[in-house]
Every structure is written in C-alpha cells, then in structure tokens.
Amino acid sequence: MSVLERETVHTVNDYCDGPRVGVADFKGQPHYFECIFDEAADDWSSNFWLHSLEPETFNLVMENWSFWERWRDAFDDGKADGHPCLPGDQAKYQANTMVLKERLRIDRESDIRAQGLFEIVGPPGQPTNKRQWTVTWQEIP
Image (cartoon, rainbow, N blue to C red):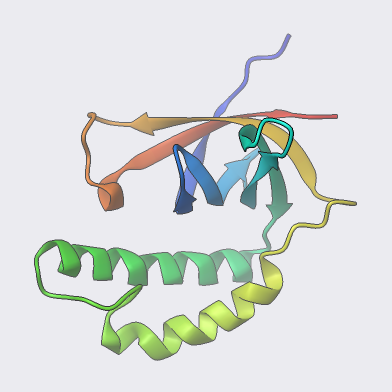
C-alpha cells in the first residue's frame, strides 16, 4: 500500500460542511475539483471530480482568488461591501470569470474521480479567508 501525500489546496470557492469546489494539487499539478453529490444519501460525498488545469487557467484562478482575498480583508475591516471584489478589480475579475466559466468544467468521460480528505492547516478558529487547507486524494478506478 502506498503512502498518500498531502497536497496543496489553492482555493476553496464553495464550502458546505467542507470544501466542495476549488483548486488543489493532484500529484503535484493544479486541478479544479468539484464534489460529487450522493443522490441516494441526499448529501455530499467525499468523492470529487478532478480536472487538470493548464498554467494560463491556473494563473487566472489565482488572480481572481487574490481579488477575493483583498475584498475579504477590506470587508472584515468594515471598508467594503458588494461582492466578490473591490471596485478597482471589477473589470479584470469579470473578464477572468468569463474565461474561467468556459474552462472550469468537468468532463465525466476523461476527468479523474478521487476521494478527498481535506484538513485545515494551522490553529483552529482561523477566519475563513485566512484558513489554509491540505487534501489527500485517493484515486477511484
């Protein structure tokens, strides 16, 4: 039995009792992940679809993430409303989002299925925007 590696979680874009959508490494390479809903259990599973990202797409994801982080810091300081970015980032955020909407898609014929175990890195009680994660993936044949 092989030892499973903890991988870096770059973004968590949707959270419901755990990360559901975002970007994390799988075998050291960035992948878009999307949690698989278990219809029979009527609940989220611990299984995910993983879609490999090329560098340009990953860079757009990370740029939009930095816009969200700046907005969240300002929001926490009582200096921002609106969502999900500051007014000065809005045009670039929207342009990136249009491209990402086309690229961040699961292909059930070719993408990878894996079970994911997410863990928070660092002390408990961190604010949402400061929380860091790792994930351990086990590929599902």
